[in-house]
Image 1 (tube, rainbow, N blue to C red):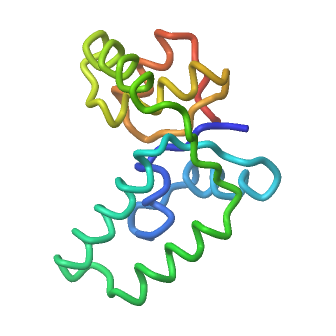
Image 2: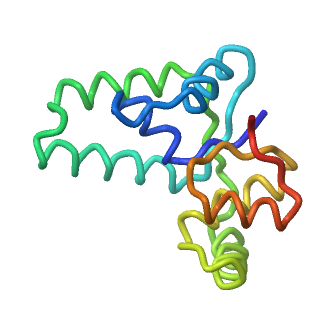
Length: 135
């Protein structure tokens, strides 16, 4: 299992953001499940809403992408959010991250999973914490 963040996830929706790395992560889902923090669902939804408002995608395309995600082997973490919040605050302060990004570190650290992300600051924080990055 590995943790995948919203930056990688949304590259699967917007083809102009896809890279060899993000495609390899998507392919990895065929043989290995991914985990995401609970905030991931809202991050994805917000990105889709903004993209629709800007005319980047249609409502039908957004709904198709949500169906694709529902069919993927992605497990949403249901840990106590108050505990996650405390740890996300600590890691966010330490690594100069948003609480949203820190939530991915909390999950990867707690479960011992590697992290898939495009975010340079999140990658650096994971490296400092000894969390492997998905190749």
